Image (cartoon, rainbow, N blue to C red):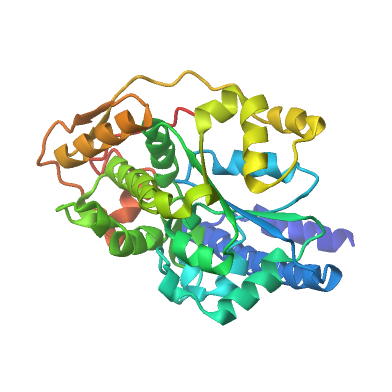
Length: 360
């Protein structure tokens, strides 16, 4: 026993080269993802056996990522009548492989899904895997839902949609902070914490969503800040296009109001879903909201057409228009997948990309 322990200890003490260490970490991440996916599907089918009746109420929490969807979902998860699914991507992949936009599957993903993409087979899998629960209501949270409203309304015609919005400058800074970080995945791939494996999420966004913004710039010539701005703008505008048709099925919540006035906003959200608001839930859920930190008043720099559009949207939503035109309209950014690793691996400055820090 001592010999074995000594041998293992000796092996662990052998230094690995950075490339081998990165490959080992990447394979560990890949194996963990596969395990998590299998566990999620087993749990989903297990719920169907244990709870043969599907829940009657369904709510989707959506909005641009980094807008507060996670903390709102966490608050709703504490409600006694709610079963909560936080970004159940392996389950969605099983319902329709096209939902896989992060590069974990070999099949190419699609970000926008419309009513015409709906099939009866998807609906049956959706009900089997997500709606069987011990509670009267199922709440699902995924930022991608923002671009799949038509499809989701076919899957769950009576669903409630909770759309959370937040000051665009704060969202953009938070996205940029994540998008400049990456971790290994597999033997030779890099998983960007925001844009996915080998920039897959940005690729499907550029193909399916970016044209709706009418930008003339090439997708790979946008700076990290401009990428984040495009995602925020597209999320806001996409929901606005559906607003009239959704009617009372859509409830919009401001992140800042939810944080500062949770005792008022949480009961409003519960009522929109069709739930009661027990005092103990409002109190407990309100405790998870941290007081907002003071936000930086510094401007964000964008190309002219984006700066104008951003400021107009900020003003319309009641936020400060704080975008300025980039120092040079001719600044060139090259963020194609083959050059992306330069700033993903912490070399943003060498790549000529200004450093951004999260204010959260």
